[in-house]
Image (cartoon, rainbow, N blue to C red):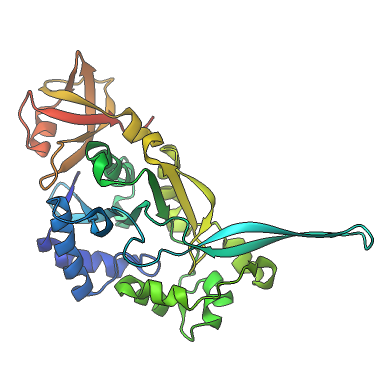
Length: 336
């Protein structure tokens, strides 16, 4: 399996993946015009031809037949061209000694606190490939690119996880909150955010603090949770040190995970080594390996052995990276 930069030739395949992802994957909408426009910006981003505020990086996962079976991406700096909204969970306390009353009420505050952070996005992996090392390779490849080009990314890294919704695409959080301000179902709102209307919809949401007790029980239970299909993805990110700190998506209540970029394990522990071709050995740990290129970036997860400043990999792994022996690569153990 191979992770590489997405290209305009991937449009048809990405459209099919977006359609199969269903509701919740707002950054990869099943819109040909929107995806075509995004792929143009992606190619410019990998060339280093756009400002950080406009940078959009999208990676694809190829199987052994060269078919695209998954995607992951990141925005260089979220919210620098239009507002980036989140709900921050707070706590309101009402107390009276005279009346013997003490109540704690979870409260939602509409904020722009995450503005400027590098935002992971567009993670989707076909059901047939959610096994072995594939999820970790696809998700963590983004950290390897950040480690190689830190000047292009923000000190804070976030990811809005897909929130709970049912098989029909209904979100309990949206049904209890957002639908009162927009006479549309969650699937429609979800699609509109994906094609660029997220900020407009967010600005129509109430600005004053919202008491969670006014929401339905199902909506309250959804706050800070993730869709069942995203549980494994959340676990992979938490392996790297990302965690939930009280910010949730304004549409479906899904958890936002965050970390300082310098403290993400794959970034912090990765290092540059010279590629050596040989036999890694039966005890070799699986490593995440990046060829250190921008436009032609290629990343794999493969058995490798560190020896005297070199990374020993098989000839097949070197071929996947399109590198010769003696070329510097960036590598880190796939799991800490």
